[in-house]
Length: 241
Image (cartoon, rainbow, N blue to C red; front, side):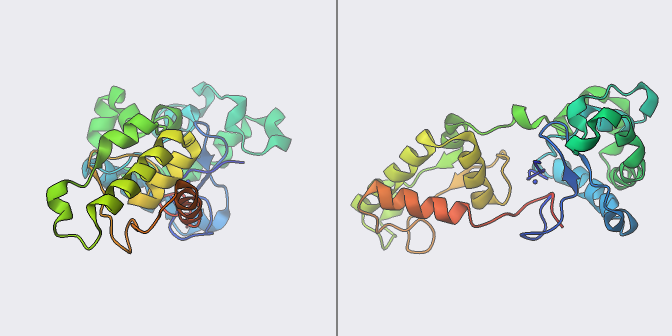
């Protein structure tokens, strides 16, 4: 069972509870009663709207059926995919999905209505995919990550405690790591870097120092081992509470 990683897997604390569950691009709101009673989906709606307005990441991976109902569509007219059912044991009764999540969807709608983005979404339905992207459409590639990076320059190195040689070697290791990483590992790297696994419009800064990107590595194997340990040790962003 997969989860929504913010990119909204909305993780508020490591090891917390998922707000959305299921397969990517078929995520549905969790049916845990505590989340509903605590209005967590209202909070989620506010966060989604304000994040979009402030050039933040979008919520990717929601079920098209959930989006259909969220923006006023009838549950009876929703086209439901079998993958929209997070519980494999009840996929034969998949029509219960929207009925079990109707209150959560209402809370999401209430939260979104509290943000200035709601009128645009309701008047221009073609803008909905901009806010609720498909996870598969925003998957990181090495080229996407490399193009976002602001690499250290020789002028910047003059003010650094790390030598130009160490800086070049370390940034070279990072480039190699990015070029050879799988989409899953790239997502974890971006999430570790900026707090969620969806690239933003802003650049990714690199500073080769002792506590940011350590410059003491002499071989790639040790660099790769440690960066994997670092990026796999955190689970933050939107999706968990």
